[in-house]
Length: 291
Ligand SMILES: O=C(O)CCC(=O)C(=O)O
Image (cartoon, rainbow, N blue to C red; front, side):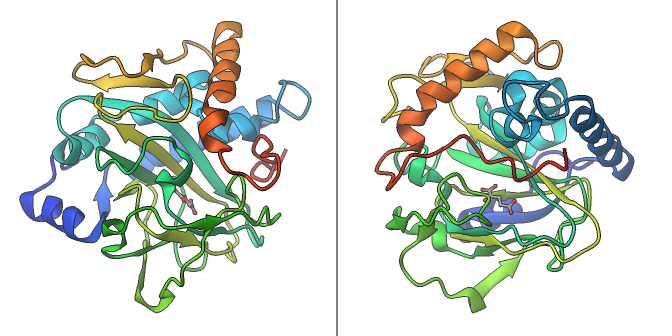
Protein backbone atom coordinates (compact mmCIF):
# COMPACT_ATOMS: atom_id res chain seq x y z
CA UNK A 1 0.00 0.00 0.00
CA UNK A 2 1.28 3.53 -0.71
CA UNK A 3 2.13 5.09 2.64
CA UNK A 4 2.84 8.83 2.92
CA UNK A 5 0.77 11.17 0.78
CA UNK A 6 2.41 12.99 -2.12
CA UNK A 7 2.71 16.77 -1.91
CA UNK A 8 -0.02 17.11 -4.53
CA UNK A 9 -2.35 14.95 -2.39
CA UNK A 10 -1.57 17.10 0.67
CA UNK A 11 -2.23 20.26 -1.37
CA UNK A 12 -5.46 18.82 -2.63
CA UNK A 13 -6.55 18.09 0.99
CA UNK A 14 -5.62 21.63 2.06
CA UNK A 15 -7.54 23.16 -0.86
CA UNK A 16 -10.65 20.95 -0.86
CA UNK A 17 -10.77 19.88 2.79
CA UNK A 18 -10.93 16.22 1.73
CA UNK A 19 -8.99 13.60 -0.17
CA UNK A 20 -10.06 10.29 -1.72
CA UNK A 21 -9.61 7.49 -2.61
CA UNK A 22 -6.56 6.38 -0.65
CA UNK A 23 -5.81 2.62 -0.66
CA UNK A 24 -5.11 1.49 2.89
CA UNK A 25 -6.27 -2.14 3.22
CA UNK A 26 -6.27 -5.01 0.74
CA UNK A 27 -9.72 -6.28 -0.30
CA UNK A 28 -9.08 -9.47 1.69
CA UNK A 29 -8.07 -7.52 4.78
CA UNK A 30 -11.18 -5.32 4.55
CA UNK A 31 -13.35 -8.44 4.14
CA UNK A 32 -11.80 -10.13 7.15
CA UNK A 33 -12.30 -7.01 9.33
CA UNK A 34 -15.93 -6.86 8.21
CA UNK A 35 -16.34 -10.51 9.07
CA UNK A 36 -14.86 -9.99 12.55
CA UNK A 37 -17.21 -7.04 13.15
CA UNK A 38 -20.22 -9.08 12.04
CA UNK A 39 -19.16 -11.99 14.24
CA UNK A 40 -18.98 -9.59 17.19
CA UNK A 41 -22.49 -8.32 16.38
CA UNK A 42 -23.80 -11.90 16.45
CA UNK A 43 -21.87 -12.79 19.61
CA UNK A 44 -23.50 -10.00 21.61
CA UNK A 45 -27.27 -10.08 20.98
CA UNK A 46 -29.60 -7.55 22.60
CA UNK A 47 -29.49 -7.73 26.39
CA UNK A 48 -26.04 -9.32 26.62
CA UNK A 49 -24.30 -5.97 27.20
CA UNK A 50 -25.51 -2.89 29.12
CA UNK A 51 -26.09 -1.09 25.78
CA UNK A 52 -26.86 -2.63 22.37
CA UNK A 53 -23.63 -3.71 20.66
CA UNK A 54 -24.34 -1.15 17.90
CA UNK A 55 -23.93 1.63 20.51
CA UNK A 56 -20.38 0.50 21.28
CA UNK A 57 -19.53 0.28 17.58
CA UNK A 58 -21.11 3.68 16.95
CA UNK A 59 -18.87 5.75 19.24
CA UNK A 60 -15.66 5.20 21.17
CA UNK A 61 -15.39 1.65 19.79
CA UNK A 62 -11.59 1.60 20.16
CA UNK A 63 -12.03 1.62 23.97
CA UNK A 64 -13.93 -1.68 24.19
CA UNK A 65 -13.49 -3.59 20.89
CA UNK A 66 -9.93 -4.67 19.99
CA UNK A 67 -10.47 -4.87 16.22
CA UNK A 68 -11.60 -1.24 16.19
CA UNK A 69 -8.41 -0.11 17.98
CA UNK A 70 -6.42 -2.19 15.48
CA UNK A 71 -8.05 -0.47 12.49
CA UNK A 72 -7.21 2.91 14.02
CA UNK A 73 -3.55 1.85 14.22
CA UNK A 74 -3.26 0.62 10.59
CA UNK A 75 0.19 1.83 9.43
CA UNK A 76 -0.99 2.93 5.96
CA UNK A 77 -3.76 5.01 7.54
CA UNK A 78 -1.36 6.60 10.04
CA UNK A 79 1.21 7.35 7.32
CA UNK A 80 -1.41 9.26 5.32
CA UNK A 81 -2.75 11.09 8.38
CA UNK A 82 0.80 11.96 9.46
CA UNK A 83 1.37 13.60 6.07
CA UNK A 84 -1.29 16.13 7.06
CA UNK A 85 -1.24 16.38 10.85
CA UNK A 86 2.40 15.61 11.63
CA UNK A 87 4.17 12.84 13.57
CA UNK A 88 2.24 12.85 16.86
CA UNK A 89 -1.24 11.37 16.55
CA UNK A 90 -4.04 10.43 18.93
CA UNK A 91 -7.38 8.79 18.24
CA UNK A 92 -10.24 10.67 19.85
CA UNK A 93 -12.96 8.35 18.58
CA UNK A 94 -13.42 5.38 16.30
CA UNK A 95 -16.94 4.76 15.01
CA UNK A 96 -18.86 2.55 12.63
CA UNK A 97 -21.50 4.10 10.41
CA UNK A 98 -23.65 1.20 9.24
CA UNK A 99 -26.62 1.54 6.90
CA UNK A 100 -28.58 -1.64 6.43
CA UNK A 101 -29.60 -2.65 2.87
CA UNK A 102 -32.62 -0.82 1.46
CA UNK A 103 -33.18 1.44 4.47
CA UNK A 104 -33.94 5.10 4.95
CA UNK A 105 -31.19 6.11 7.38
CA UNK A 106 -29.26 9.20 6.35
CA UNK A 107 -26.73 11.66 7.71
CA UNK A 108 -27.79 15.30 7.39
CA UNK A 109 -25.47 18.14 6.30
CA UNK A 110 -23.21 18.98 9.21
CA UNK A 111 -19.71 19.95 10.33
CA UNK A 112 -18.12 17.46 12.70
CA UNK A 113 -16.44 20.00 14.96
CA UNK A 114 -19.76 21.60 15.95
CA UNK A 115 -20.27 19.48 19.08
CA UNK A 116 -16.80 18.10 19.78
CA UNK A 117 -15.81 20.91 22.16
CA UNK A 118 -12.44 21.46 20.44
CA UNK A 119 -13.17 24.84 18.91
CA UNK A 120 -12.38 25.33 15.23
CA UNK A 121 -8.97 23.67 15.19
CA UNK A 122 -7.34 22.50 11.95
CA UNK A 123 -5.33 19.90 13.89
CA UNK A 124 -7.80 17.08 13.48
CA UNK A 125 -9.27 15.04 10.66
CA UNK A 126 -11.44 12.01 10.03
CA UNK A 127 -10.24 8.96 8.14
CA UNK A 128 -13.30 7.06 6.83
CA UNK A 129 -12.50 3.52 5.70
CA UNK A 130 -14.95 1.59 3.53
CA UNK A 131 -15.57 -1.99 4.69
CA UNK A 132 -18.23 -2.52 2.00
CA UNK A 133 -18.86 -0.62 -1.24
CA UNK A 134 -19.68 3.05 -0.57
CA UNK A 135 -21.46 4.21 -3.71
CA UNK A 136 -24.12 6.76 -4.63
CA UNK A 137 -26.62 3.88 -4.40
CA UNK A 138 -25.46 2.65 -1.00
CA UNK A 139 -25.41 6.17 0.53
CA UNK A 140 -21.77 7.22 0.33
CA UNK A 141 -20.69 10.52 1.91
CA UNK A 142 -20.91 13.79 -0.07
CA UNK A 143 -18.47 16.65 0.49
CA UNK A 144 -18.60 20.30 -0.60
CA UNK A 145 -15.08 21.20 -1.71
CA UNK A 146 -13.60 24.17 0.13
CA UNK A 147 -16.38 24.34 2.72
CA UNK A 148 -13.85 23.67 5.51
CA UNK A 149 -12.69 27.25 4.99
CA UNK A 150 -15.92 28.40 6.70
CA UNK A 151 -16.11 28.83 10.43
CA UNK A 152 -18.50 26.54 12.25
CA UNK A 153 -21.88 27.68 10.90
CA UNK A 154 -25.17 27.54 12.90
CA UNK A 155 -26.74 24.07 13.20
CA UNK A 156 -30.26 23.12 14.30
CA UNK A 157 -31.36 19.89 16.00
CA UNK A 158 -34.00 17.81 14.22
CA UNK A 159 -33.83 14.58 16.27
CA UNK A 160 -35.20 12.93 13.12
CA UNK A 161 -35.50 9.15 13.56
CA UNK A 162 -33.85 8.47 10.20
CA UNK A 163 -30.78 10.53 11.09
CA UNK A 164 -27.71 8.61 12.27
CA UNK A 165 -26.35 11.68 14.10
CA UNK A 166 -26.95 11.88 17.87
CA UNK A 167 -29.24 14.92 17.71
CA UNK A 168 -30.11 14.90 14.02
CA UNK A 169 -28.18 18.12 13.74
CA UNK A 170 -28.11 19.92 10.40
CA UNK A 171 -26.53 23.02 8.99
CA UNK A 172 -28.99 25.95 9.02
CA UNK A 173 -27.55 27.79 6.03
CA UNK A 174 -28.28 26.60 2.46
CA UNK A 175 -25.86 23.97 1.22
CA UNK A 176 -25.46 23.96 -2.57
CA UNK A 177 -25.84 20.19 -3.01
CA UNK A 178 -25.21 20.47 -6.75
CA UNK A 179 -21.59 21.29 -5.99
CA UNK A 180 -21.07 18.25 -3.74
CA UNK A 181 -18.78 15.36 -4.64
CA UNK A 182 -19.89 11.75 -4.09
CA UNK A 183 -17.13 9.99 -2.15
CA UNK A 184 -17.26 6.61 -3.87
CA UNK A 185 -14.99 4.04 -2.19
CA UNK A 186 -14.34 0.34 -2.62
CA UNK A 187 -13.70 -1.85 0.45
CA UNK A 188 -10.23 -1.08 1.78
CA UNK A 189 -10.16 2.50 0.43
CA UNK A 190 -10.41 5.55 2.65
CA UNK A 191 -11.28 9.21 2.44
CA UNK A 192 -9.91 11.96 4.69
CA UNK A 193 -11.97 14.97 5.68
CA UNK A 194 -11.55 18.11 7.76
CA UNK A 195 -13.83 18.67 10.78
CA UNK A 196 -15.32 21.84 9.30
CA UNK A 197 -16.20 20.11 6.00
CA UNK A 198 -19.89 20.38 5.01
CA UNK A 199 -20.87 16.74 4.53
CA UNK A 200 -23.87 14.41 4.47
CA UNK A 201 -24.95 11.02 3.11
CA UNK A 202 -28.17 9.60 1.66
CA UNK A 203 -30.07 6.33 2.17
CA UNK A 204 -28.75 2.90 1.27
CA UNK A 205 -30.83 1.66 -1.66
CA UNK A 206 -28.43 -1.19 -2.41
CA UNK A 207 -28.76 -4.83 -1.39
CA UNK A 208 -25.65 -4.86 0.84
CA UNK A 209 -24.89 -3.19 4.16
CA UNK A 210 -22.91 0.05 3.83
CA UNK A 211 -20.24 -0.10 6.51
CA UNK A 212 -17.75 2.70 7.09
CA UNK A 213 -15.26 3.08 9.91
CA UNK A 214 -14.71 6.73 10.85
CA UNK A 215 -11.58 7.41 12.90
CA UNK A 216 -11.14 10.88 14.44
CA UNK A 217 -7.46 11.82 14.75
CA UNK A 218 -6.20 14.81 16.74
CA UNK A 219 -2.73 16.12 17.55
CA UNK A 220 -1.56 16.42 21.18
CA UNK A 221 -1.91 20.22 20.99
CA UNK A 222 -5.70 20.09 20.51
CA UNK A 223 -7.66 20.77 23.72
CA UNK A 224 -11.10 19.88 24.97
CA UNK A 225 -12.61 23.30 25.70
CA UNK A 226 -16.13 22.44 26.87
CA UNK A 227 -16.05 19.19 28.83
CA UNK A 228 -13.96 19.11 32.01
CA UNK A 229 -11.73 16.36 30.69
CA UNK A 230 -11.39 14.24 27.57
CA UNK A 231 -9.65 11.08 26.44
CA UNK A 232 -7.63 9.85 23.46
CA UNK A 233 -5.41 6.92 22.45
CA UNK A 234 -1.84 7.70 21.38
CA UNK A 235 -1.16 5.83 18.12
CA UNK A 236 2.02 7.47 16.82
CA UNK A 237 4.83 9.64 18.19
CA UNK A 238 4.48 11.11 21.66
CA UNK A 239 2.11 13.25 23.66
CA UNK A 240 4.14 15.85 25.52
CA UNK A 241 1.28 18.31 26.07
CA UNK A 242 -0.96 15.83 27.94
CA UNK A 243 -4.18 17.62 27.09
CA UNK A 244 -5.83 14.20 26.80
CA UNK A 245 -6.18 11.40 29.33
CA UNK A 246 -4.36 8.69 27.41
CA UNK A 247 -6.32 5.44 27.05
CA UNK A 248 -4.92 2.08 25.94
CA UNK A 249 -6.39 -0.30 23.38
CA UNK A 250 -8.43 -3.10 25.03
CA UNK A 251 -6.96 -6.62 25.25
CA UNK A 252 -10.31 -8.34 24.87
CA UNK A 253 -13.80 -7.31 23.85
CA UNK A 254 -15.93 -5.62 26.49
CA UNK A 255 -13.72 -6.47 29.48
CA UNK A 256 -14.87 -5.01 32.79
CA UNK A 257 -12.22 -2.29 33.16
CA UNK A 258 -12.68 -1.10 29.57
CA UNK A 259 -16.46 -0.98 30.04
CA UNK A 260 -16.08 1.17 33.16
CA UNK A 261 -13.76 3.50 31.26
CA UNK A 262 -16.17 3.61 28.30
CA UNK A 263 -19.04 4.75 30.54
CA UNK A 264 -16.79 7.36 32.17
CA UNK A 265 -15.76 8.73 28.77
CA UNK A 266 -19.36 8.90 27.57
CA UNK A 267 -20.37 10.77 30.73
CA UNK A 268 -17.50 13.24 30.46
CA UNK A 269 -17.87 13.84 26.72
CA UNK A 270 -21.61 14.42 27.07
CA UNK A 271 -20.93 17.98 28.27
CA UNK A 272 -19.58 18.88 24.83
CA UNK A 273 -21.80 16.65 22.71
CA UNK A 274 -25.05 17.87 24.30
CA UNK A 275 -24.23 21.59 24.61
CA UNK A 276 -27.18 23.78 23.60
CA UNK A 277 -29.39 20.78 22.75
CA UNK A 278 -33.10 21.51 22.35
CA UNK A 279 -34.02 18.27 24.15
CA UNK A 280 -32.11 15.54 26.02
CA UNK A 281 -29.58 13.77 23.80
CA UNK A 282 -29.85 10.00 24.23
CA UNK A 283 -27.08 7.50 23.78
CA UNK A 284 -26.95 6.62 20.09
CA UNK A 285 -30.17 4.86 19.12
CA UNK A 286 -30.00 1.23 18.16
CA UNK A 287 -30.14 2.10 14.50
CA UNK A 288 -27.21 0.30 13.07
CA UNK A 289 -27.22 -3.29 14.12
CA UNK A 290 -29.33 -6.09 12.73
CA UNK A 291 -29.43 -7.63 16.21
O1 LIG B 1 -20.91 7.53 7.21
C1 LIG B 1 -21.60 8.50 6.93
O2 LIG B 1 -22.50 8.44 6.09
C2 LIG B 1 -21.35 9.83 7.60
C3 LIG B 1 -20.11 9.84 8.41
C4 LIG B 1 -19.77 11.18 8.96
O3 LIG B 1 -20.55 12.09 9.01
C5 LIG B 1 -18.43 11.37 9.48
O4 LIG B 1 -17.63 10.41 9.49
O5 LIG B 1 -18.09 12.50 9.89
